Amino acid sequence: MFDVALSAAGAQISFATSCDENFPPEHIIDGKDDTFWSSTGLFPQEFVVTFASLMNINTIKIECSNVRKLLIERSVQNEPDDFEPVEQKDMENSDGQWQSEEISVSNMTAVHLKFTVMAAYDHFVAVHRLHVDGNAVHG
Image (cartoon, rainbow, N blue to C red; front, side):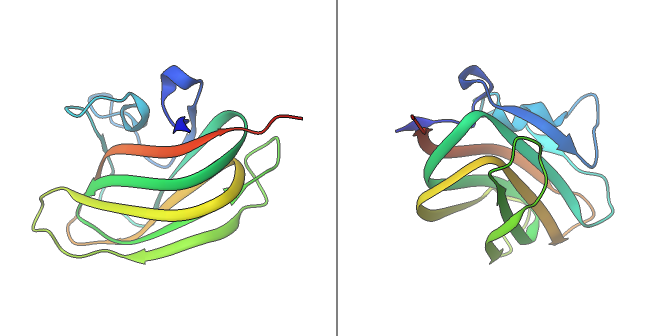
């Protein structure tokens, strides 16, 4: 298993509801700790990560700031549609500090993962890093 959500592994951000040229959504999957995606002040905010192919996924770890409620959905379709819920999390207020949430999903498959920030503790949220532990489905 390895991080299949890195741009270096072929993952892409196929959709995001907001984009600031200084803090683009691609920062979520660049593998760097000093970059992040920043949302605008309206909610919900979404981004979709598309993998290089169908993946077996064991865990999803997201590092973010100011997120109150997060919905994670998956799709196994070629196009990013027909999403089904994976997990909804109410996250603790960290007063603007990094929040880290790890979700065990054992043996789930996906081509796309959609992350929806339903509510926040502030006007803006940041997603610093996404780590998806998995591997490609063969056959």
